[in-house]
Image (cartoon, rainbow, N blue to C red; front, side, top):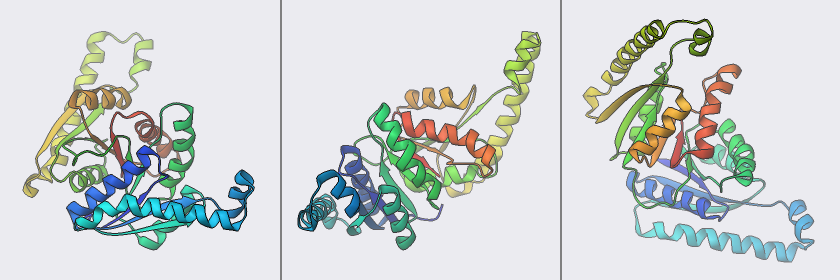
Length: 289
C-alpha cells in the first residue's frame, strides 16, 4: 500500500460514526495527510416524506448538520492534519462513492453499527455497497477511538495478493505489533471422515498441509525482512472464521486486516463471507483491503 496521504471519513453522527471521524483524524495527524469528512443529508423528497416540511426547515437542518460536522473535525485544527468537512445530499453509499470519486482517497473510514438486526441492515446495505464500489481499502471502525493501533492481526490466504494485507497493516498501524496469520485445513476434510479414512491418515494429510503452509509463509515474510518490519507469524489448523476470531481474542487485537474479495464472482462469494463476518462481528476495528 502506498503511504496514506488522503483520507475520506463519513459519519451519520452515531457514536461509531463519530468514532470513524476521530480515527481518521488520528491517522491524518500521524501521517500528515489530508482528511475530507462527509455527512449524508437526505434528499428533498425523502426528507419531506419523513417530516412533511418545507425548504426553510430543511435548510436549517442542513446547517445544523454542517455545524455538527465542523465541530467534530475542529479538534484536528491543533494537529498537522489538513481537514475539510462537507455535508452532501444523498444516501450514505451515494455520498461516499461520489466523494471518493472527487477526492481520490488512499483509505475510506466508516463506522459500524450496533449488533443485531439493525447492524445487519446497515452493514448488509450501506457498508456492503461501499465495499463493492470502493477502489481503496475501507476501515470499518467498531470501537471508540482511544489510541493508535497496537496489536494487529493480518489474515492471509498465502496467495499472491497476501502482500496487500501486510502492506495495509504496516501502513495503517505503523507502530503496532503485527501478527500475520494463516488458517489451513486438510483438503476435503469432512468428506474424508465420511469415507472412513483413518485418524492416522487424516493427521498425515494435515501435517503435509501444515508443512506447505509454513513454507509459503516463510516465503511471504522474507520479502519484508529488509524493510525492518517486525512481523510475528501464526499458522493454525482450522477454518478461517473461528480461527481468526479466537486468535483476535487471544491477542486482544485492536485491528484485523483482511482481503475484501478475491476477484471472480465465486471467489468473492467465498472470501467475501469471511470479510463480511469480520465486518459484522469482529471484536475490534476491521480494515478490508
